[in-house]
Image (tube, rainbow, N blue to C red; front, side):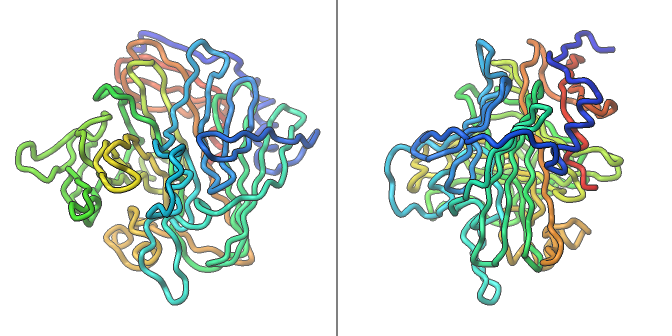
Length: 420
């Protein structure tokens, strides 16, 4: 049925793929320690991890991952992640610490605003993991060519240690991420805050997700006009189709939230919860196709761990400092949380948890918890309009199938994200 089949080159053999999973999972088979390169990028000192396919920069402050360059040797490399426009302006006293390095993908624990304290536990928005300074634990090069950058963070508000592993492997246009959480006890919302840059041309980016059991707009006021912020979506409304999401207006009653940028002057939030039964043990996924420059970004996760993807739709809808009506980006954030409401709303009964949807992870001080993610990007042929489905049949690759019938096959160890 497919009219076109496009395969990314440098496909690794299956046996090498099996060895890769063992290396990514256990960290064994190290051949050498390598000192990582350091650069200051958009005002933030950063460590660099790279191979022939991908280059990753991760900030020392907050551990924010951007820029990331995929297909870096191509005539038109892919740089999908957002870097906030105020980075080189020297602004002081920003309203939230996470805004200082704000860019790309970063790990949030707790995820969300965290305005409400629980006893003496009071977190900054998106937690210390997104705002404090990480320490370098090393860069390792495995015998099979896998490169791993390891960072650590000892938190204070709720004492414990988070270890961040960023991994690249030859021939695979993917950043594999493991966060190992140790020493913490009790429930916490957490997740990845992947944020994509948006082009100027409206509707250029086509977004799709794996089957979902529930779609819902932000239950409260996400953008407050009293703070010079404006939203276009209704509050707390459910939907079954990203192209028909309830708006604040009667005309149109529904708006399209599957193509971006759109609705300039507004900032919105919605969430979709993965349908575990429909996925039948396969990873949940999110995909964004740039239909002008012909590439696709994708993320993979375990829906049993991170059941929800939060869409942060930012199209110049905030006018306070540092936003100043100029920020345009799209957050596609894989989380276990109650929207971005924060710590207390996520660990107490809420409209999602009351439907059996996990909004927090119970941490055990005696047992490490791992959160895994895979994010990648590849070029696609002209006419590849939107990802309709992803085929996970083969162990060492995925096939992205478009609505127009084109197929792109990518070397990815997708079972890496699944909890064992």
